[in-house]
Image (cartoon, rainbow, N blue to C red; front, side, top):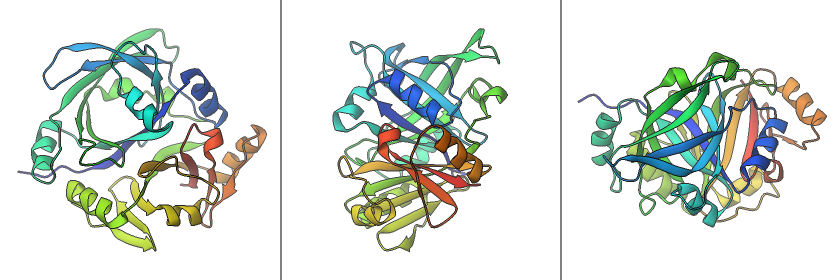
Length: 292
């Protein structure tokens, strides 16, 4: 049986106020999709039902960012559980292709791998958004009891043309790709061992307290709180473990700096060609812009 090839697909940020988060990410220079309301099955093979959450997405040539919040607290939504822990990045989605084949492979690697579940949402289609089409996905989740570091999912896109529309891919901040995500954890080796088994990848310690997984597309970091404090001084983790960082590749970092200055957003330069922004402006995660 051929083994799945994984790539960084998207990161999801759970927010308390979807209107405020939409405004915050437009201020950061992202071109966001119109709001879309979720529906899905509550169990594998179950009927599709309305959910009480909606999102805006920023689509890139490689990967995307999802900003998700409650739209009807009376209905089912995983956002409620996320926000009980903290507001910020929770979802790390790995593109996997055929989720049935992926499920068989992952089930042999780690306990707590859940069977694929179909989800869908109506999405505006076309440059003027006048048409609505169905965006559909198949998701495999890892039980939080086995992977509490974040909501780790493996995703198959069933309607890629609805999600990656050409007019959505240009952003004022110049983002072209979701480049990296980072977990902040108590035991870097233990988390990296689990993640390595799932991804069938070796991890590399790139500095004390920081492990790196290099996917064919995208990078995943696992770091200790001490290592994170050196990299992003002054940022206090809301809890441990959590999804701490989300990084984006941009065409022209100097142009991105200019946009952030014009929009009154403070940033700090990294030692490599990149800059990072504190959670005050991002609804939770440390957001980095990296020269592509």
